[in-house]
Image (cartoon, rainbow, N blue to C red; front, side, top):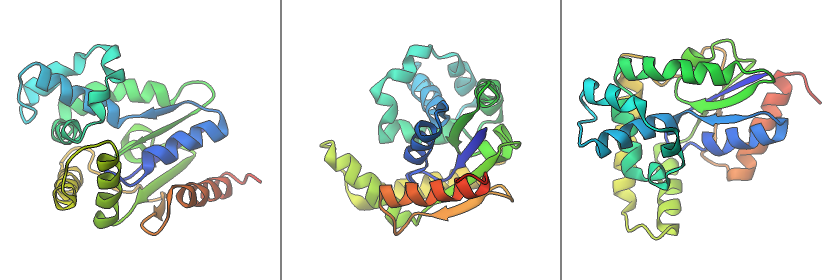
Length: 208
């Protein structure tokens, strides 16, 4: 069983995908973390994330970088969005993601092109979304809860910029697969969002 979970920044797709993996007992991959690692490695290399050459060179990052807490920062998220526009970067990371998706027993993957590019044969395709304002507020609360001094307006502006990059990139743009179940979590808390998604998945798979 392959479950593809796509959606924009701060839509809640990562938490939902992780909980789906735990519920069904199958492994979960946050594919965005791979792009964050590339972006962060570019920074470590004193490179330019807007340079395809620098970004591709960073695709050989060490596996232990994926455990670095710095990958979860807002700054690294912006770097990830910038390196992900390069077709050569997406190509370099494709096989890694595809191998995870097709492993024996199934998997849950979340990202921005799982249902359209990485696992077009997924058994269930989800597109989790929410308004820019709702997503910005969630991310702002998360950041301020960690003691980060940031303005809500700045978070909203950053998310809007990431959306524009992800939607308008030429290679594998952010979009819902034609057959994806689109779920808007704007008015949901985390538990309500997960329960809604879980019910949709069970219905799609004809599970009780």
